[in-house]
Image 1 (cartoon, one colour):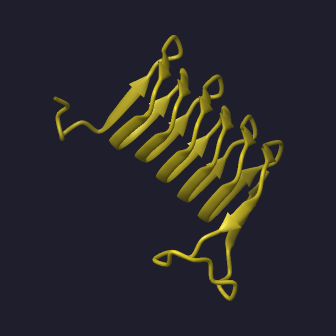
Image 2 (tube, one colour):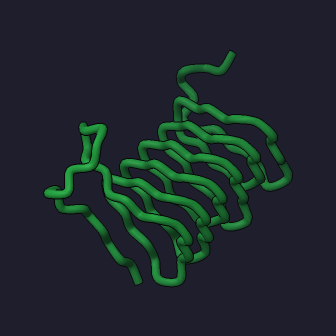
Length: 125
């Protein structure tokens, strides 16, 4: 059984997981995951590939994701390649990142989208 005192978990570059991954803390992924990810915080390395849905409070993506992404705070780095719909509360996209999908702002604390809310979008150089 995992210790609740663990601050993060690492999936190394030489690891491929086929199945869903759930983590209550920060998850660093440098390998490949073929399945859904649900965690508090996701940090994805440049060589990493995720094929499945990603749900996280915060996510910093640098690799390839094929699937939907839902995150409160999302940072898409220039090396990232995303194929899928993205929902977020706050979004930062570095110049050079590729997103092939629909971006939709979600309102914190509400299940449905409120068109009157101003989305937070930051474009980084």
